[in-house]
Length: 427
Ligand SMILES: *Cc1c(COP(=O)(O)O)cnc(C)c1O
Image 1 (cartoon, rainbow, N blue to C red):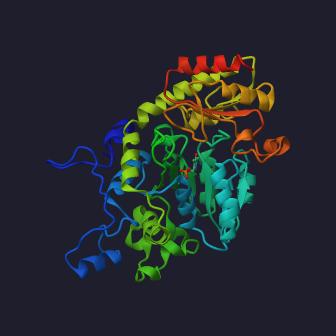
Image 2: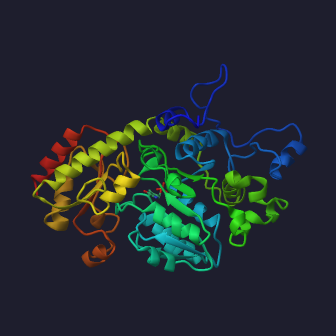
Image 3: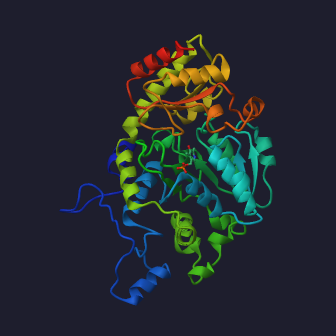
């Protein structure tokens, strides 16, 4: 499958049925798996043999879909998780523990920011947030001797900043740590961060990968390229024996290609249990089969809507990375030459009240907290997710009170634009 193009991998990756086997991936709806002898099972618990024993750690349906996502990203191993939040948490906690430090872009999903700045801080892991637009010197200055990883988003939700992945990878590697990229908004169809030096990729599969608003999920993919032994003192969890598995050393036993995901499965999934159900993995796979077709349409609609908004006198400003007027246009051309995503943000002249009036009159676009769905949806953060903040606080958070986040679905772009036009006529 690895020599095929991404479109073919979307449809057929991860699963090759044998003679007479189901064409669609089987849903293995079973918590547990049967063995003939206790010795057989013991080998699984010692990580000496691979196989399934309990779906809290691994399930064949989930592994099939994870293998497809690994193929799409060009990675060596992957795992599914219950949500994007779980994926972000595991990706860091698999490397850093109490007393450690992580450098993160400040332009990241709000839920991830809270996880890092509040919850993981309570666990003793400190984060330094740097602007995605910082200079190399500013970025290098953020590192400490106990830094264990660097984190950023290809296209940030909701700020739509585009990360200079090569710049962040260079700094991470100069300090002997991996770069973790949340690739949710771009998807591997539009950007494969491993090709630009990233080491680990995470996803909220809830968004474009599922694409139908059907199942919450997450994924972590390893490139297999980061040399844990070259920085053995920083990553004892991968390079020294794990007492909870009779002294297995992950990077030794599973190689660079398998160590990260095996450790995250064997330790973190065992202890935290943030699994994806096989049923959800099946829905996710249905979404992945059309990801390449949908992404092209999301981007076509996003660009058309952004261009229309830019030409409309009732609109104060438009933010869309693939617009030539965007501050991120050059980076988008480099990392996202085939298109960025379907999400456009903009301000309606007249501020908060005008934004609310506009949204109330939309008929195709629905008001939802969700994004990256086949159906167009939109949100006014100032009156929803960020409603506890006053106008000054909103500005400081990069979410002005007139901001509308508009997630273009895969409907007709003419209908989307006509809908926006009629809703604006009420403003
Ligand atoms: C939604 C989102 C998350 C969190 O994912 P959930 O599946 O909602 O837990 C993380 N990162 C990005 C970029 C997101 O858009």
